[in-house]
Amino acid sequence: MTPVAGTPLDTFRAELERLRHDAAEALAAATNAAAVEAARVEFAGARSGRLKAAQKLLGAVPAADKPAAGRDFNDTKASVAALLETAQERFARVEDQADDAIDVTLPGEAVTLGRFHPITQTIRQIQEIMGQLGFECVDGPEVEDQWHNFEALAISPEHPARDPLDNFYLAVARGADPLLLRSQTSTVQIRVMESRDPPLRIVSLGRVYRPDTADATHYPMFHQVEGLFVEPGTNMAHLKSVLRLFASRFLGGDVHVRFRPSFFPFTEPSVEVDMEWGGRWVEMGGAGMVDPAVLAAVGYDQDAVTGFAFGLGVERIAARRYGVEDIRDFYRNDVRFLRQF
Ligand code: PHE
Image 1 (cartoon, rainbow, N blue to C red):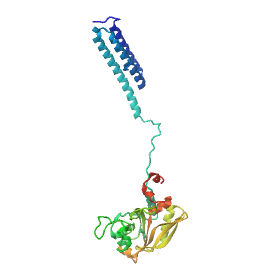
Image 2: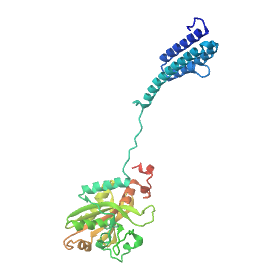
Image 3: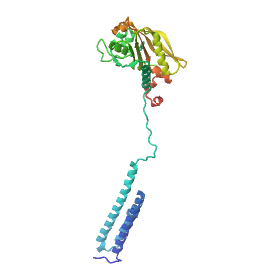
């Protein structure tokens, strides 16, 4: 049956056609997601959208025309939905792109640069200065045997320095010759002299371990710089000159070095080394002429060979230079502290 103009079905179809046309026009004109959303409310809004209003007109269509009118309504509803979906996708894509796009005018994220720990920086500076004085950097193991940590250094079995309470002996101890975490870097003197002939100018920087209670000037692990100089005719004046040159270069300006008589089993004579800088004397370590007994232990001719050795605390040197009052600060790993170096 062909509908006649003016029938309720005609009116209904005309409204559907207008609605579809208006929706297409509005969505084509939409330039952003908000305009698409406004069109969605206008045409497909659940409460007062124009599709909803058209659906109400369906009631006025005679029963015989209802199936056709219902189909037309559903077609219109589907095509409006398709138009909306296309428009929504268009702007969704644009907005996604905006999210991914790089805005080159933004200031950018600050990159936090890491830096070397102050002790590492100090070690490298010491190596640099000693290198300029002709000293070669060498390394030694941190787990040592009795020979290198004590015996070759003329530290006898009865010496208090070998007391189990003063050392970190390893639980995997090898019977009568237990291994230990080295308590001094003087071990490296022995290792180098055992494997090389004089002349020698070496420095060795590394960790040493002693079961001390941590306080402002002690820590169970710390670093030493060990120096060994073996050349004919070496004397204490050479030792003092090297230490003074080193200290002046490291601390800057005029540093005074003072020797106080002391005792180490592996040097003779032995001294404590103090340094004065900025009006304050600070004890930095020990030094002396290599003891003939040590030269003999490594197979050198003790009558022909002379040399000096020194061992200084790296933390003490760094603390002095940077004005650090408590060496435990070096190990707390508080970035507020570390960032200052
Ligand atoms: N090894 C000594 C110590 O740890 C320091 C030292 C090194 C003394 C070299 C003399 C010569 O106390």
